[in-house]
Length: 237
Image (cartoon, rainbow, N blue to C red):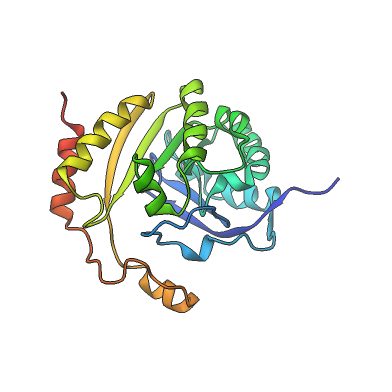
């Protein structure tokens, strides 16, 4: 029987920013989107498979004692949904060890969302833009696939954390935030919302990969303004 394998860019241990507690983050290769602000362009293309389920599982086991009551494993990328068979097989092994699993996703995969979402403890959902025209401009992709994913997510009523990158001159207005606030009412079971300030730390990656950086000249988002927009977003009506 052929062992299930995947194209993995890297594995990061002891992360505290990718879900609750201390986590191991697995960055998968491959993504259909080309977001203007993407800071992982090295994960866009799915390379040759380089790790089996057992190999990744054995790495994760080494960190299990550090997870505590709420830590665990987060699948990220790239877009992990593009390698859902691998994630499902790995998740079933992790569940046997009672390890919490989270999926950090933009919701644009291979349309086989039911089973993988059923097996997740948490979905960290990246909102690119809630407006169809803005989504297309931001990602180079229509919003239709994301809407399909969202329909399945709502049906299963999984725990959701929302993230949105705020980019100066694109979505850093109170008007946008108020629209986002209304839009998020359509997503069930949201436990946490976070606005992430756009930064330029990935510019050197684009230069190294000889890829044109589409936000050239856009300054990093002011962190205080981003926090104020987040406060407005979280205000009770």
